[in-house]
Length: 212
Image (cartoon, helix red, strand yellow):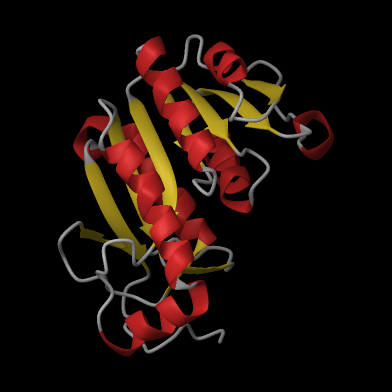
């Protein structure tokens, strides 16, 4: 399998890259602004860096050549999301994993839901919902990851998921766990197709994350 990572310089993307290199024989295309300066190749036979902006349709289409699956680390740019979706559709690349945030379906109950909305802001949540709508209205076999509040803890890869339409559970999750989930999806993309998953750490149903 050949995987394109858009936003490859991000923390989660770097963890995903390392995990895929260590635990599979997949090839990776690492796409990032100033990627040559920000990224280092550890396996020249399996990695390629592309300097680019994923709002640039021609660059994205070129990066998609020979690609089987795409991980999009950032959906903040609606133009970028639309560009990626349209480029994938025209290139007949179907598998998209995209990282978003919790709360876009008003699915977070109780005190934590109120805290989250206060911290993120209604406008920010609605913006992320628009990005999700673009993806969900596409022909792609997408998996949207609605991530709760992130922190780092080496070795902690515990995650749980909730489906769209279910109440969101969990106030925090490690970036390492998110990387593990993304890895798991790449091993069985069909099993996760057309889903929007709430992602959190088990047993963290609190009013706010432990680090706040």
